[in-house]
Structure formats: structure tokens, C-alpha cells
Amino acid sequence: DGIRCLVRSRGLGDVYKRQLLLVTVLTIALFTHHRNRQAILHLSGSLIEQTADATLRRATSYLEPAAAMAEVGARVAEDTFATNGDTAHLQAAAIKILTSYPQFAMVNVGDEHGNFLMPKKLADGTVAIKTIRRTDTPPTVTWEYRDAGDRIIRSETSNEIDYDPRERAWYSGARQVGGRHWTDTYIFFTDRRPGITASYP
Image (cartoon, rainbow, N blue to C red):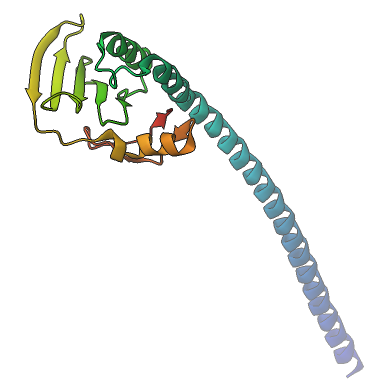
């Protein structure tokens, strides 16, 4: 019996040792997992923060020219429409702005009378210019299509006007703010594609 007890005690000792070893291994594994998880979360957070900063810098450098050119365009526009002035210099400036930046889809100029000028890039790289003159009698809307050499290849004029810049967020926003204004993303009226607009009164 004594030998049997001794053998059993040893057996229990082995079980305890195994249990102790198992508890120790589990404790180390859990501790290591916790530390690694913290390290990975910290590293992930740093990487996400760096990526967000880089994305913000790129987006800012991509969009900033639109805001700067809106201010330049506002100075060039002055009272061209209100005085029924010649829009040739305004068209030339807007086309230059439009073609200088690949990210620009169009340049819009509107006034408080609802007159409007919009040179826009077409898919083939040429430019179309929409001009709305509400101060003319009768009011007119004209589309001019120009080739790569800036020659008018086609022109269409109508009295059916379906657009009013005064009702658009880019116009009303700049007017309300009294300075630089960015719209939220919205669907462009002409292209029916999403975009964002910088404007200046």
C-alpha cells in the first residue's frame, strides 16, 4: 500500500506539474498575445494616421488650384454680363484656366441677373462654351463647339433656357459666405456626373 501511495503521489505530482506548466504556457501566451495585439494596434493606428495625412495633403494639392482660380476668375469677370459687355476676354481667361489644369471639368461664371458662361472640356479634348444671356431681349442660350485650334466648328442658339446659376449651390454658397466656398459632392447639371466645386463671389 505504501508503495502504491508513493506511486500515486508521484502520479499526482506529474499531473500538478503538467497543470502548472499548462497554466504557465497559457499565461505567457495570453501575455504575448496581449502585448503583440497592442503593438499591432499601435502600428496600425500609426499607419492609418500617416495614410490619412498623406491623402489629405494630396487631396489639398489636387483641389487647391480650383479655389485659387475661382478667385482669379472672379476678378476677371467683374461686371461683364451686367453691362452686356463683350465676353471674349472672359471666355479666353476661363478657357486658359480650364485647359491649364487636368482635374478641372469646367469653369462657371454667373451673375445676379442669371447670366452665365461655362467653358467645359469634352471627352475628345475639345472645348464647348455655354453662354446664357438673360439680360438680352429675348433671353438666349448659346453653345459653341471649338476644335483644338480654338476655332468655332459649330454653334447652336435657343430661347429655351433650362439652367439658372443663381439656384446652384456653388453660386448661392459663395454669395452667402462672401468669400471662398466649397460645395459638397453633387451631380453636375450638364455632365450628370459627380464632382465638387470651388467658387468665389
